[in-house]
Length: 142
Image 1 (cartoon, rainbow, N blue to C red):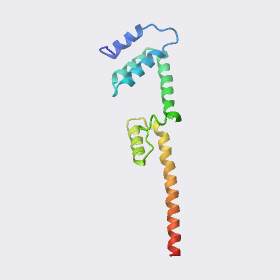
Image 2: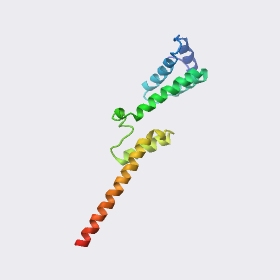
Image 3: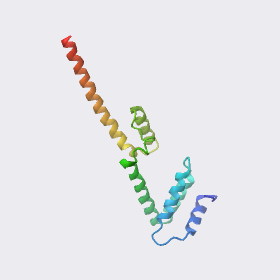
Image 4: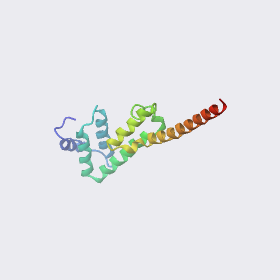
């Protein structure tokens, strides 16, 4: 966006006349601009906040948009797309991802990874117990 600040950008976007019920388009535009950046720019966060303060309609649109985007994180068909940020290959990588998202206040999106770690712990414990029992039997025989 070629505006000096987020308020100016907001006013310019509001000049784009939309039909009744198309308020979501402004919200989608802000989010898509944000996703085009390589790193987070607070400009878009402030712009989204500005829209939310402007009208309840924008608040509801952003809420709906974030619910849609959040549900994509849980979609099994998108699992491969998010493999780099939600790794399941090694315990160390999985724990790093969980700690990272928790540290930045987004620990809730790692529920699936947390369940995977817990499940692996159970499996690992069962495997260790079975191996231990096999070793005891061998010692008794030998």
